[in-house]
Structure formats: structure tokens, C-alpha cells
Length: 221
Image (cartoon, rainbow, N blue to C red; front, side, top):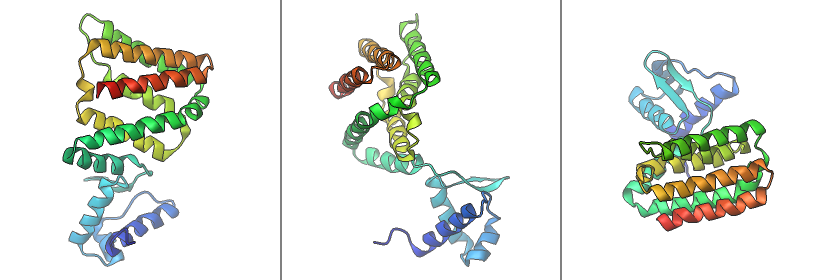
């Protein structure tokens, strides 16, 4: 199966050769075109593709830089198209995200340091202040940070990309603007209880609470 066109493949190989040689900066477009034997209009197409996939960064004054590999941009853009074409695709992706969180929860928790747990407690406190203040605020940023913080030490770039893309789409479909206060307080009670069990090294109890917490989203949908 052909994954890339010949010209796309040539440009990707060009990027990889720079990485292998420890280089993160590319020469001017005209120079790249000469080296690869590709016309400038065609080369710009390859550059735009690589930029959209998160392989490179293009700035007017600093030129083209090769970025560390990140799975998120490609997943997010594809998921954006999917959700825009059919909103039910988000439900399918949400189920995938839930299964990933459950499958890797115990491994993720075992890799959390005390400092990580402390930061997650701070996220919970920030969320509670927003929910219990005189002017109620939706703690969406905290919700995103809470979940991603639990899994950040897995050091698996693909899991990170899949989970981060979920939260990017969570905002797109409007779940970050959900205004049911009782629901939100229930969510954050689970969050607080989960991190308390993690802090007490009771991962199995924390996992049970996580599973119950995930059911809240199904019921909400």
C-alpha cells in the first residue's frame, strides 16, 4: 500500500536525514528545491503538509524548524474533520478514550511522584473554588489538566496524543460549556476521591472510582 506520494516521501526523507545528522533548521525554500529537484509551488505543498502534521514549524523570520515528533496534531486534525462531518464520531472516540484511561490507569498511577500528586490536588482545589465561588465558573481547564496529569508519566507519545486530542474535541463539541452545577460538583467529588486513594496508594479503589466517574459521561451523553 502506498502511504505517501513520491514527492511527499522525498520531502519526509529529507527531514529525517536532517534529524539523523542532528540538524533542526532547514535552509531556505529555494535551496531545498534545488537539493530535491522540486519546484517551489510543489515544495510549498509538501511543507504545508508537514506543518499540518506537526513535523515542522514555519516562521517568517526564523525560517523552517524541525519539531520533536508529536502524535497530537495529526490526530486532532483528522478527528476535527470526522466530528464536523458526523457528530456521533465523537461518541465513538470518547469511548476509545475511556477504554485507554481504564487500560493504562494502574500503570499510570504507579508512575506518579509525590510532586505529581501534589499538583493534582492543587488542580482539584482550583476547580472547587470555581464551583463554590460567588460567581460560579466551569473548571474546564482543570478538568483537562486533571486527567492528562494522571497519564503524563507513561512516556507513551501515542497515548498522550490520543488523550490530548480528546480534550481538544471536548471543547469543539461544547462539553466545556456544560452548566449543570450538580453534575460538575459530582464530577469533582469523584476527582478528589480518586486522587486521595492514589495518594494513599490504594490504586484498586481509585480504579473503581475512575470507572464510576466514566459512567457519568455516558449518562450525560
